[in-house]
Amino acid sequence: MHGLVALMEIQASRTHARVDAQGRPVLLLEQDRSRWDHLLIRRGLAALARAEALGGALGPYALQAALAACHARASAAADTDWAQIAAIYDALSEVAPSPVVELNRAVAVGMAFGPEAGLELVNALLKESSLAKYHLLPSVRGDLLFKLGRLDEARAEFERAAAMTRNAREREFLLGRARDAGATRS
Image 1 (tube, one colour):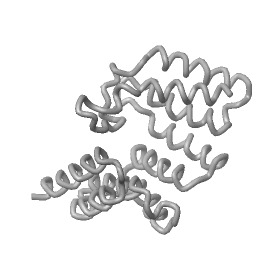
Image 2 (cartoon, one colour; image 1 turned 90 degrees about the vertical axis):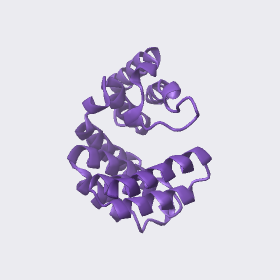
Image 3 (cartoon, helix red, strand yellow; image 1 turned 180 degrees about the vertical axis):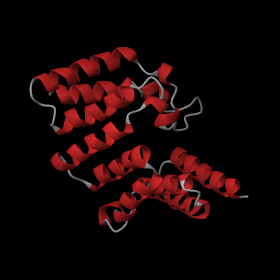
Image 4 (cartoon, one colour; image 1 turned 45 degrees about the vertical axis):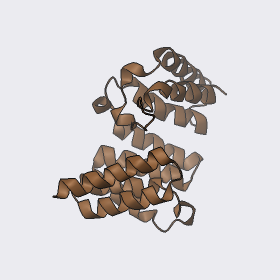
């Protein structure tokens, strides 16, 4: 119960920073953290501490709250403890295994240990049928390829992701990432 409350409060704390004035999505690492609701963060962290004190630290909600807490505790995106996030995803994949958890773990591994390490995990998910139409798989893959300087491949992945999403704002964002990959190459 406390883990779920912690997760909800910490996630809700970022509501006002998730989109810009035009309604376009803002990536977590690019969000203005001054727009995060620090009262909700404090309440969420307190609920997480209660969950941990009561022995619920390894429940799926508490683990997800712990992931959100890592972001909330970082005063700037660069201060995020990605190795800790990757370790929490390892634990989450044990108690609540799913291809989406594995994709998120790949992002964390890529941030903590480099894009090649993350790409290896993402590539292992390419044959996962439940992710075949999930736009975030090619989006994540595109981001990792972009970081590796494999710009043509990154552009193609962003375009594939854009074609899969039904959300017009996300499509616009992903096509922008595809254009950036093409422009960077020139």
